[in-house]
Image 1 (cartoon, one colour):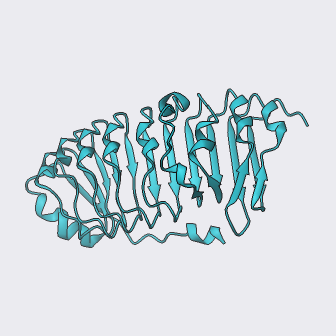
Image 2: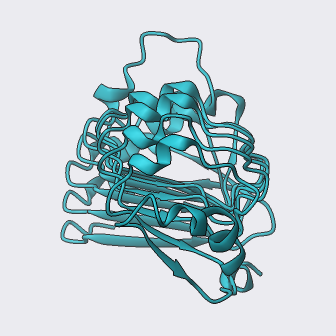
Image 3: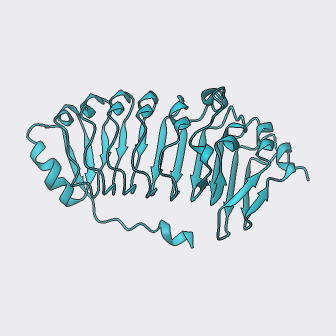
Length: 270
């Protein structure tokens, strides 16, 4: 089977083990690969190596599959810009690896976006994510076991968007976030366990938008008053408890109270 002109490939599978078909290696113009598992358990994918032969692959989306760090790094996809992992499970080496010679920034030099959503066994952010120096957007949402972020997240000097919504056990954000000088948008909505923001969050002069629905228990440090032209989207309670008292000191502050949103994404999982 030869399909040299295909630019988007969608594979729908329903087995616990699935080997990527060899004909993919001939799709030299392929830009987008989407693999969705409709089975009851995460599928173990094999023969990832064929993806390393695709010079134009820019986006990969994996849903309900089992992923390891080696699977990702061995692709050697120098043009990959976006990696999405939805309802995936991760092996131990997804978090760490003994081979210190692996250079993540060289393996994924163009990666700008990582989305991790509804990955219930994710309890920590893998170290290698913080080595993707080209990253501009990091979204980790609906991961209930996630309790903290690594200090090394401060190394992501190009990061502009950080979404952490609905990580209900996330208790704090690392102080190293003050080094994210390019950060423009922070979403911590529905992080019910979050109790404080970094003390020097006010150093993030490019931070202009925050989403904070259901975050009224979170303490705001004094430095937040240094954020200019800040737009905060939140529920009424969060607005009253946290932000209303700061309006006289933050004259450019705009607080937008949003109606209760109903998350319908769960309906598509079953």
